[in-house]
Image 1 (cartoon, rainbow, N blue to C red):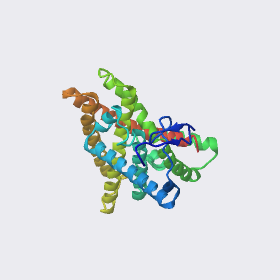
Image 2 (cartoon, rainbow, N blue to C red; image 1 turned 180 degrees about the vertical axis):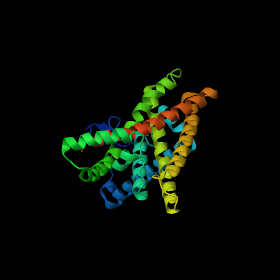
Image 3 (cartoon, rainbow, N blue to C red; image 1 turned 90 degrees about the vertical axis):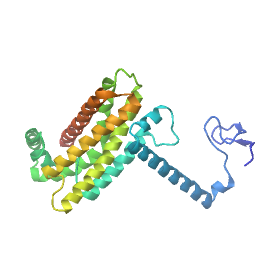
Image 4 (spheres, rainbow, N blue to C red; image 1 turned 45 degrees about the horizontal axis):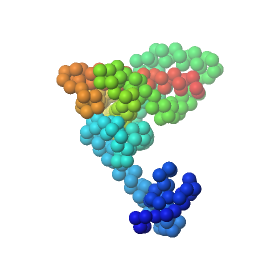
Length: 281
């Protein structure tokens, strides 16, 4: 194609003398675009471009905490995957690993809610009322609940990012960042956590294969939970520097308290899943 082109934009139906339409971004159709080879080249370019952006985003997310959020708030869009898209990719990967390992972090079974959670007494009371209202037995209801809670955990996982994004302006109120900065920070943090949970699931599965038990064993669950909490604290500490300019002892204190907030939100999410699943099945 020469430096000067003359074509009619098929979308805007106006003459264009550049390689792209200034109104809609359309580009002129080349004869090769209508061939199988041309289609294959477009498909290959799209796939490799997405993969490259995803890998670049994941690397920056893990290697340089906070830099991806800072880059996004500065307007850099082409080189990296958007925060919400990265979160969805991490979500798909997490539930894929959860399926492969048969270990659960969010989608606790009904038996777990009834006997192994801090709210087990309340869960038993709520379940008894629900079974009485629906005239159903525990044996009939349990498989339905266990299937539904897995689907709910996948579809509602975004809910965890919302309260954390609302807390960030309070934690860093002096910095006066735009609210979308807090949203991006929250999405990036939970993307990191989902990847961290993937590692935890694999370790739990490996522990189970070695005979030490999986997440259903308290000592394994406690060890991995402690490691996850420590990693989350360190990540928030490192990320809050580039994004919010945090420093000193106050930075460490905020990182610890925000990590506690994340842990509380995760536990709260499990309980919310219990309520949603219980009253929608």
